[in-house]
Image (cartoon, rainbow, N blue to C red; front, top):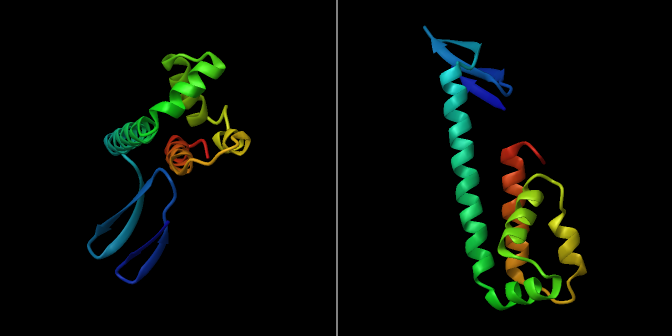
Length: 123
């Protein structure tokens, strides 16, 4: 990430911060408090994305019930499948390509899952 302060361009990498001290930009490592704040913010964003994804899934109860019946899945199985997708174990895009009909929400679910993976550092 590039940071522009007082006309100076500084390359800031993960785990670093920049402070403005007497008009000069000083690079430093993040404090443990800053790391915790970033981690909590990331975890909150992941939880919000998971809620959004559940909302998208809930828009199609008949499709969900069809899949559960056809593949003998429980709600817990579906939740585990989404968790596996979040961790890169399951590729939702490959599953989507095997479905003979398109559901616009499925693409949204894939994009939300991709964002979760990015936040988890899995993408």
